[in-house]
Length: 68
Image 1 (spheres, rainbow, N blue to C red):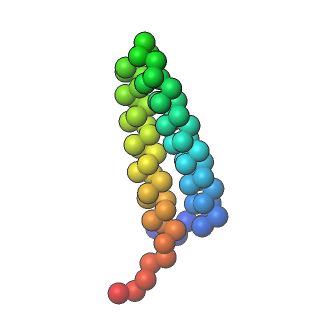
Image 2 (image 1 turned 45 degrees about the horizontal axis):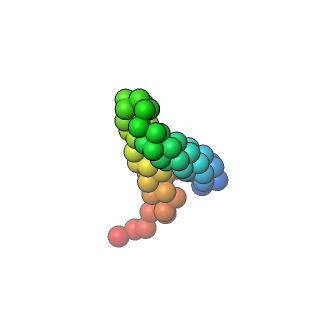
Image 3 (image 1 turned 135 degrees about the horizontal axis):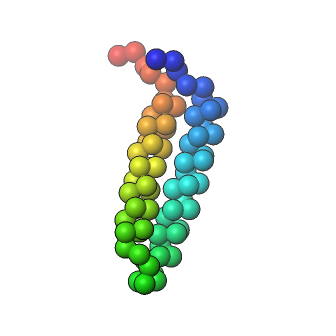
């Protein structure tokens, strides 16, 4: 498996963090307004968790492997 280019990983990481932050803000707004669709909020929260996992994997990819 090819080692990803660190600059590409950083760019992807920034994009994911922005999307994660935007979803967090949108969820907060929708939770305040109880008239909003619960299913939409649940889907947004699920996507937010997926983004968090992806961010963690990419951050891990930036850490160089060290021999034991």
